[in-house]
Length: 372
Ligand SMILES: Nc1nc2c(ncn2[C@@H]2O[C@H](COP(=O)(O)OP(=O)(O)OP(=O)(O)O)[C@@H](O)[C@H]2O)c(=O)[nH]1
Ligand SMILES: [Mg+2]
Image (tube, rainbow, N blue to C red; front, side, top):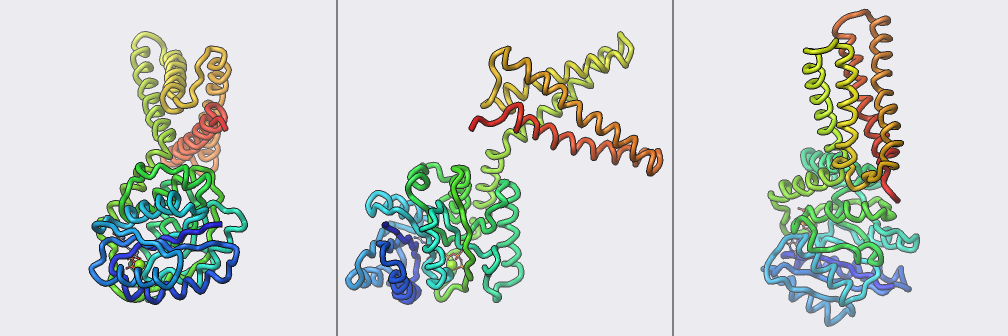
């Protein structure tokens, strides 16, 4: 079993002199694994490269990619991934920082999960037993935790608690070898979220192992301001991708309401309003059904008449469930709390929210179910 540890460096001379011996000492706990360390140096201005070359003379399996210039964390890791797979023939790839924030003491905890055949092992600050430095200012703790939470909610990936951890082990076969690295959206820090979403969507087996995230030992932070904007771009891009059925469903819903109102008002000029409402309701229902079939859920659309007719009947019946329940709820609230405009509108709004959840669930899980 070959394991490649990628360590990006930019002016980390002092840190790697401490890190490498500590890390190599941990290799002895895993006799059957064949470890290599792959540095990706972003053209450091100090003697980082000299220090790496000195290690290469003493220790076997230390590799170095020298970048012409500093291209960001994502750029460095992508080079490292490709080299680890193509040249080093790695079975697993580890991501780790050079500055000792990822403690060599936590390294065996991650590696020992490999035998349980996980696809992705994350060193996590936000599971029980994990931590961030207590010296961190409150705002930094806040940004780190809530940034991660924000991404998890928007992307609907609540299972992973630490979304941006940089200490990870990923399996090559079936996971890394499936990723098209030219598609990664960010060359900076946000590549971590990008890759996590891609791996999650492969239905990978993911586990989080608690780590104590430390303070940078020496040297200066390379964390750039543009990382924030970059991360937001990545989260919004994937949020749109992952929720596009829902967003289209909501747009169609508004379209349906508009159709309903328009036809109702036009017909009311000619026929009784109660009859107009019935006709406009049926029109709106047909309109939203067709729009959902050919647009919102177009990748799972029903094509033939024989497919369309039965689901249209289910669609019609299920769409009435929240409408009926809403009437019942309004009636119940009015008889309990009094027949006021406020009470009936509260009932109406609860009904609308329930209707959105109900309809979207029925449409996406039953009518236009994903083919597995
Ligand atoms: N090759 C390369 N390495 C980089 C680049 N940016 C950062 N690194 C390295 O990547 C690792 C993580 O960067 P850090 O500056 O520690 O970022 P951070 O851990 O988020 O921030 P701190 O908490 O301040 O340390 C370190 O080992 C850096 O030396 C880059 O553009 N190119
Ligand atoms: Mg750091």
